[in-house]
Image (cartoon, rainbow, N blue to C red; front, side, top):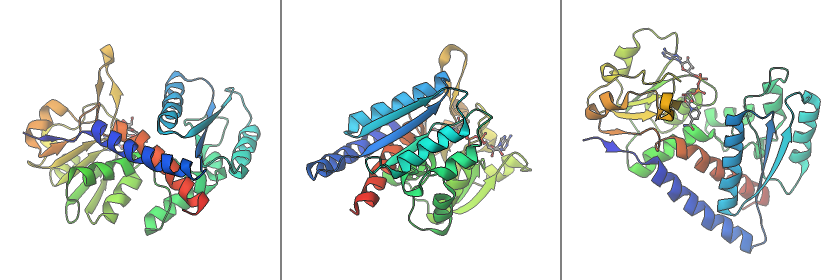
Length: 283
Ligand code: NAD
C-alpha cells in the first residue's frame, strides 16, 4: 500500500511553528504584515485573496488589501506597489495573478521590492534560487520540498522527472530538486516519449495542468508521485494531474488531491512572510 503524503497535516505543522515564531516576535514589538493587491473581481481570485488574508489573521499577522477595478491603469497599480515597497509597516507584497490583458504582468512583478516579494516571482529571487543564494522561493515548489523533508523521503541521488516548465511551478521545482541533489529531467509539451521518460523516474512530479493525465503506464513500480495539479470536475469534486486510482497501487508514496500539495502553498506563503520579516528586522 502506498504511503499517503498528508499535505494537510504537514501544512498545519508548519503553520503551528510559524504561529509560535510570530508570537515571539510580537513580544519583542515586531508585527508582520502582508499587503495583497487584487485587480477586478474574478471569483476564484477573490477566494484566493480571502484565504490568504484569513491565513494571516489565524497566525497573528496583519493583512492589508487593496482592490482595484478591472480597468485600473498600469500606472496606478505600479504606484500602489511603490507605496508598499516604501512602507516600513509592510513586510510582504502579493499581487494576485492573472492580471487583465492591458497590464504588463512582467512590469508588475519587476516592480515589487525583491525582499518583499513573498510569491518569489521577481527575477532577482528566481536568479538567487538558480545559483543557490538566499532569497524568497515560489510557494508551491517550496511546499513540495517540505513534503519530502517532513515525510522522510530521500531526494539525493534519485532520478526526478518534473512534468511542466512554468515559471511558477515547473522550473523552480526542477531547480529545487537539483539543489537537493536529485538527477533532474524536465519534461514539457514538446517532449517526445513522455511515458517512457516518466517510467524511469524514482520521483515523478506532475505540474501539467491536465486532469488525470498521468496513468499507470507512466509509473515505475515503487516510485514517489507528487501531484501539483488541481482541477474541479463536474459535480465539484477535485482531482489532480495524476489518475490517483490507477497510480496509487503501484507507488511507494503519493500526494492526494485534495489534501496534498494544495494546502502547502498557503503555508509556504506564510513562511515567506516570516522570512521577509526576519530580513527586514535583521533577525
Ligand atoms: P501551466 O499551464 O503554466 O504549465 C503547464 C506545463 O505543462 C507547461 O510548461 C507545459 O509545457 C506542460 N505541458 C502541457 N501539456 C503537456 C503534455 N501533454 N505533456 C507534457 N507537458 C505538458 O501550469 P502551472 O501554473 O505550472 O500549473 C500546473 C498545474 O498545477 C495546474 O493544474 C495548476 O492548477 C496547478 N497548480 C497548483 C498549485 C497548488 O497550490 N497546488 C499552484 C499552482 C498551480
